[in-house]
Amino acid sequence: MEQRIGIERMEEAINLFGSFDENIRLLEMEFRVSIVNRGGEIVISGEPEDTMLAHKAVEALLTLTAKGETITPQHVRYVIGLVRSGQAERISELTQDVICITSKGRPVKPKTIGQKQYVDEIMKKSVTIGVGPAGTGKTYLAVAAAVAAFRDKQVNRIILTRPAVEAGERLGFLPGDLQSKVDPYLRPLYDALFDMLGAETYQKYLERGNIEVAPLAYMRGRTLDDSFIILDEAQNTSREQMKMFLTRMGFGSKVVITGDVTQIDLPDDKVSGLKEAMKVLKDVEGVGICELTQQDVVRHVMVQRIIEAYAKYEEKRFGKGSGRNGEKTSYTGDRHGSGRRL
Image (cartoon, rainbow, N blue to C red; front, side, top):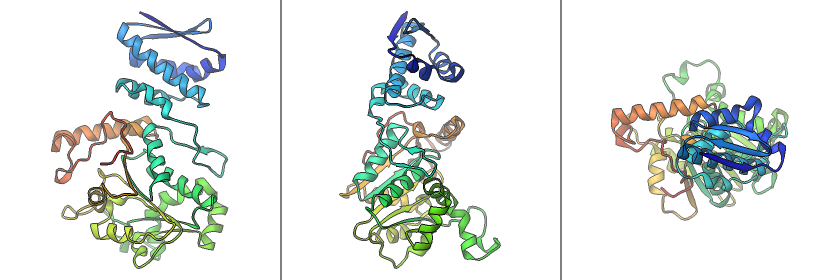
């Protein structure tokens, strides 16, 4: 069977094929078809079902090209996942909306449908809970939204916090004062801010008090008005810490809580504050709960494969979709209902 897709501009074909045709080779391997550029047309040939799927993938990638995206193997793998799950048409939901510009002039924008729905929830809701595996951009996109709100003068300061849970090490044995002991726990937050603002601007805002990066314990007893507050690694909060954090919110503030419920470092007898909050707040007005999946991973392809391998191992060990205490932990579904209420 043969399918043909017209190409209006040569630039579209060049973008689609990628460097040394790497994008097209990925599609050919995945769908077992042949794809060539012949006389201003993309010609796809192979078995009928394979050809139909490849045709949908190429059209989805051309949609991204029309939106100004530079097609990478990451885009191709993402589109393949959408096609396999019957959701290829959803690629049109990805827009060119830029959250903010980094200090080096690079636009930050959602790269998957799940990420777009996550960002939409952050923009619309007062409190957003974003859960998902490593590499889905939970923290990075939240920091980007915080910087955008700060630059737009919607808030007066950005507060980033995370619990300093010890994963096999004791803080008391680490060298230095308290700040140097907790800094390693806050490093991912520093890195995201440095990327958005640049080191000099970050330092200036830090000295002025416009930016605060601190362990969760420092939040107790405070009321945070006109602030964009991000709680990272929230799966490691206790139920008491989570309630304390949520009640710090003041007027004109926005809260984003991120975490990965498959990576809990708490003792077995402690309930994760994040898991409990997702249950308690699921029907509360003004709260958005988003679940990102392995399909939203935007790091190296190996991260996606590792997450999938661990999820399969957990399913065999505990039963489908379960983890410690029988809680649902799997992120491997092919749905893209990110942003849905759990």
